[in-house]
Image 1: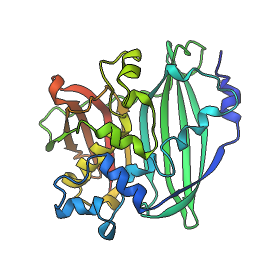
Image 2: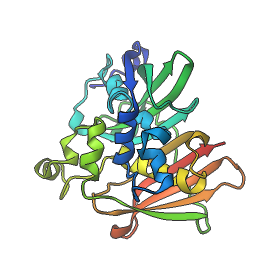
Image 3: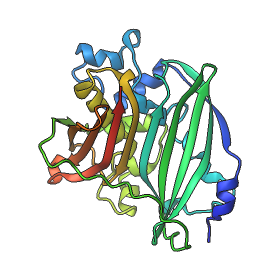
Image 4: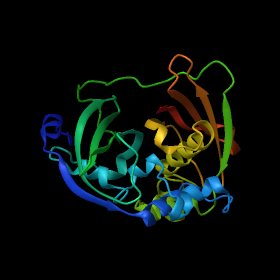
Length: 287
């Protein structure tokens, strides 16, 4: 089997240094749809360096979009990257992200689960600067064809949607060039730009990055449910349930949790494809 679970779990973390500044933050914000309308005061917090705050999902691209994926090169892991799918993402914020920063980053394989036809690898990464921890993230990677090795199946993370109308519903149009812009933050996979490559991968045309949908959704939650205050976000979790094509529209539904006042449950679908699932099992924990 290409994944030696014991060796992968016992491997030393892979370490690297991250650095970013306001230009990286601005580019990321534009990549997740900020700046429309361009002169709207609330949008200028994302697009004008003199007013800039940092959307917490920027942690997924800080210092390079694939920094967390370094754990896939750990001893005990020998997989075909063509069989890899990004299954889910979780970020825990320890404090607000600075506009300019340098951080020590480490990543390791925290778990390997056996889903039968696939293995799930959980990559855990941490970043800290001279003032202490900044964020911890878990990236869930599905590896098709590598299950059936008799390992633990892992926890079930499915969430039922509330049986009532959402508290907030917004729609976010995806620009035709959104994937081309987002990839400048570091994810250069041709699946998101090259029509021929996309067809070989089984798609009619290039698809949007899952982490782009992830960022667009968090921005929608911050702007509408958290009074535009990015510092209120404590954690953000999602499962990637389906693809998005540039030019489509995301419908973002939000439910406040009466039993847990600091929690918002979110569902994201593609409007033009009869509300086809995009993000599922999605929650934002906040102050």
